[in-house]
Length: 283
Image (tube, rainbow, N blue to C red; front, side, top):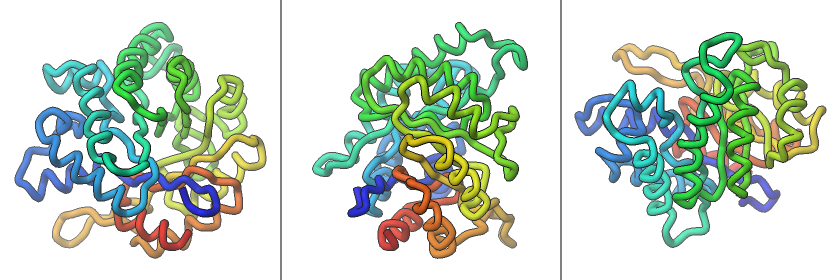
């Protein structure tokens, strides 16, 4: 926690782990598999975010839901999620840093746009969220959702566990999700559930995301979550991808969001511990 009551989150977990895997000559896999196969690598990245100043670090559990796990491996959802929380907890030993259970959207859509029923979605999230909450997560972060109806189901499940629940959707430049949900609609659906924070993450760089978080500030008194991307990935000459924004530029364009009651602040795709350290130093 900073002196002005901003809770500093972490940055990208997935791209960070893939970068570490590549440096070690390891195969690029769904990153939650590393909870089982490369646990030291997960702890290492988490400790780097703690050293950078994160007051909350995410467990490596974002996409570890049953449909995704069954497509990728023979591991059990519960084992992957529990291990993800345990590794994050291991990294925080000796600190007062909290662990967030990271939960993402399903790749399949709910009815009427897809085949998943609300009951099926509820069961999928009950398995994933239940495993993480029972493993000792301090809070639950539902992130990068594009369908507020799916978010509503996930948040309803999450609220059963008696720990704080933060909800962040991903928006385009028009301030709508891929499913056409406006900021107002998101607030209308989620605020009555008793969630503890709301906002946006991913999809946009900080400058483009400011109008979205301003719209949240104008329509709700809930604490706001702000985790923009480091711009759009660009292809470098050597074939690697680099971010539009370096850490200094990212911080410069993030800071205006603090005018809009942002409490939970971090980064999404393209950010790494150096971005979090720069945020800490600026705040």
